[in-house]
Length: 400
Ligand SMILES: Cc1cc2nc3c(=O)[nH]c(=O)nc-3n(C[C@H](O)[C@H](O)[C@H](O)COP(=O)(O)OP(=O)(O)OC[C@H]3O[C@@H](n4cnc5c(N)ncnc54)[C@H](O)[C@@H]3O)c2cc1C
Image 1 (cartoon, rainbow, N blue to C red):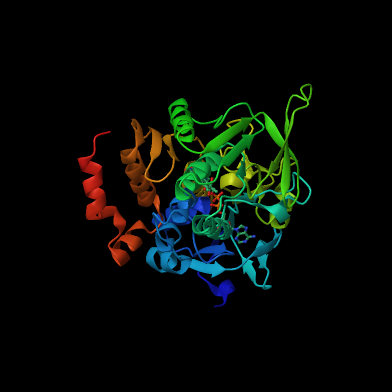
Image 2 (cartoon, rainbow, N blue to C red):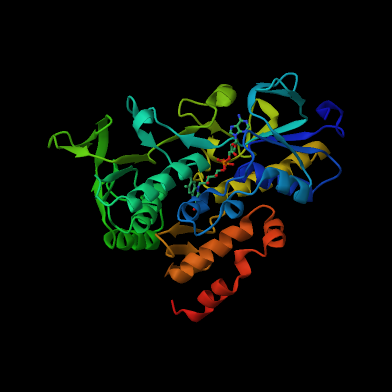
């Protein structure tokens, strides 16, 4: 395919996560015949909030991670599986690792974040994150090993008591049937500091019912193959714990994916500072979306919800830019928060409800699936679990 001979002025979106795909979908809805090209280094979109259900086999790979090629033919965009390594802002072109050059008229960058192992020496050698399909496969293997092994092993240690650490701890605990103790530690003084209080209370209950020990105000000092050392934040007490661990799962820090490519745009906190229109002031036809962005004037959290809202706004702003109209500022509308709290259990605050338990679990799954790009594709191709008899029965036959 000669990309430079596409219909005039292609819009190129780099990164097919929540932000990138939401931008593409919204651009296609406004389509006036312009080519929309999505570039991602992977071949599957990953619906990260459902990674826990993939781990537990409550959902299957095709449900959580549809192929971009299927989404592209269903929705009508051009997909390229390439890793972008360079941007030439003057010539308005991108260069990929296979030395392909792609010219853009407007560019959207939504390349997201990944686990940051740089906090402690050798951390990457001993820890596993939970942000992609590879991490999920590794943890799944570990669970199978624990369940097939008759002797009990040393504790699993999870770093970070934010949503990922807490949700992962509950799910793993259920999957290994509480056979191995899980230590969940955080340098802060409470779990889920940025979550809604109802969800935090339900998470504390869920943790209390499982073989999970929480260490707050602790940070990790060192790690080797067998031991890791936690230390209290208040050095006055000089409190250390040495743990003979079996597995270390790291959910305590993120950094931009492939930071070399976005290096020129990053500030000292490894984020891209955007203006209210999701641009950097100096590049009018480049827009930034999702977890790599931050705003000083109107801060927003890093979440799928934010990335999707930004994607829609950016699509609108690109259309306005091309038609010579005024751009609109981004305003985050918080529609709520959902937590997965073990097998068949979740907590929801928002979306007009406050609910925890099995019904919340089903609602969470339904709500997420309905946001899946190409939702109708998965529905058509499989008869989807969404309308399965089992789920309808569960939804309507249980009391809250
Ligand atoms: C386990 C887990 C659970 C989560 N649960 C929730 C939740 O319940 N609710 C919620 O709101 N948020 C949740 N999040 C956060 C949410 O997934 C992110 O905020 C969201 O994915 C950010 O979207 P994004 O577009 O910025 O990046 P991503 O979705 O991470 O997408 C980035 C894409 O860019 C591609 N890419 C990167 N570099 C390049 C390159 N150089 N060239 C080409 N392609 C590239 C990657 O392959 C990837 O597909 C969760 C995250 C995780 C890890």
